[in-house]
Length: 180
Image (cartoon, rainbow, N blue to C red; front, side):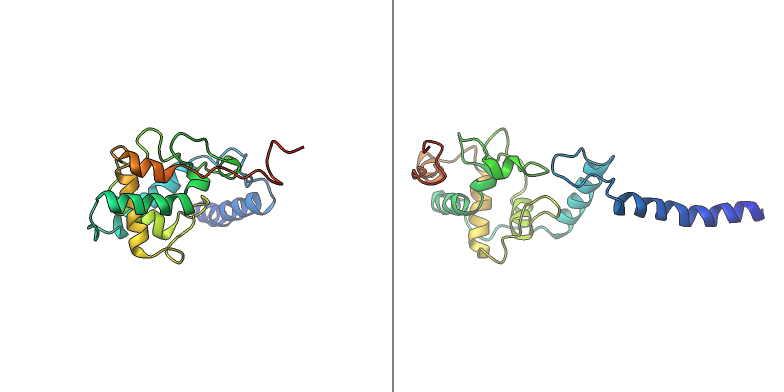
């Protein structure tokens, strides 16, 4: 019995020390191009899902109409398109260098199958360790709801909203690929 207790005590100290050594010695993946740890995605998704389910708003305080969608498209163009891209465009170099990659919100379902409260929560609070920032300090609650509702209805938006989402033409300049 004494040997069992000694083994348990050693196990209680050796396992945490081994984990600490693994991370502090630089062996754990830390670069965006590294493969994720086993179960990293599952654990992160489970924690995020539980947190959002507990905190997301259950009602939407503004109407889901054309005016809201156009305003949301402007917010999206100013704050979101740099990582998530605009309809019909590819994600840029910032998005390509991120881990995990930001979703392209105008391909496939995007977030049209998510509850608006979930998308609002993500916009307002960001998502830890993903590069998704919290916009609650930069945008008003109305602006966050506008972009949320536009994205929730991205599969139904009008041509005028799609026009708002078109990225502006890039000016030729120092960073242009056409310049020698």
